[in-house]
Length: 309
Image 1 (cartoon, rainbow, N blue to C red):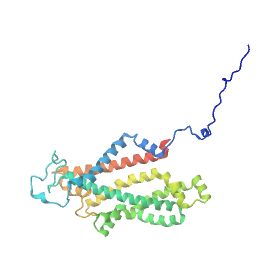
Image 2 (image 1 turned 90 degrees about the vertical axis):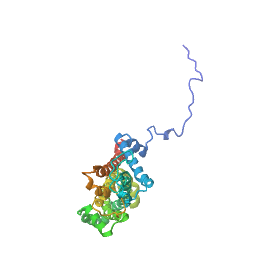
Image 3 (image 1 turned 30 degrees about the vertical axis):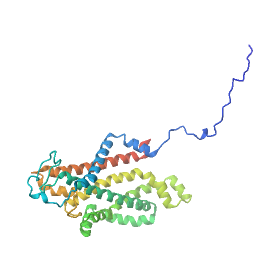
Image 4 (image 1 turned 135 degrees about the vertical axis):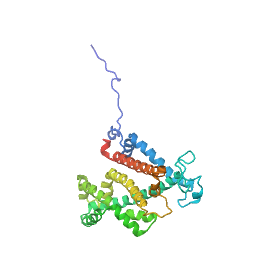
């Protein structure tokens, strides 16, 4: 049988010079993976919604209400005093005729502001100092002695003494909180940096002459994102607790500045006869602390690259 060849048996394929550069694996985005992991948790989403609602109420509602903590104009109006929670007064009123709804959100604004500012300051100082501390043996010998001194003194006691020394005031309290609190963050980062600095790629980078500061901020700190977020999630509720306890004792803030700690201290005497005055500020404080911690901890877990595998 005779086979005839035709020109249609073969066809020329145009060569693509860029085909060898293409990667068949799906494109990976670190932050996209972080948010995908975070939003996969229903508890985290619920706490995030709660946290955003509390933050909006704390910073918007006091501007609309014009609440004044020192105003006692309604003290002689018995119709305004000690009204239980109702449609008119959602959280009820106190002995001065103040709306507890206005008082709680004004106090939450102060407590959250102090916590956020103190956390940001301590984290920035702690991360920078801790990163340098973990890479320099000379600085390590000096800083470890300072840390050993202050770590053996209760942090709350240090803040109380400093608050008494500096006097009452919003910024004085923040300064007292931040003066030594950053040491704990710095030591925490120092330990993590010491683990990272001796890995093969950092040793190779150092051998090739990479400057220490460049190695810290390009080779080490980006890999500690989850660790830093974990520390922030711990610090935020911690500073709120410090402010609440100090305000409960009458230390730190000025007399005309409301806070959740001050409200809880003020209404402790009403636990038996008007319990809503005490338990509502306590409940708001608990919701603030729990939502901040859970959101921060879930974000820290999501930021850990090992959870993306």
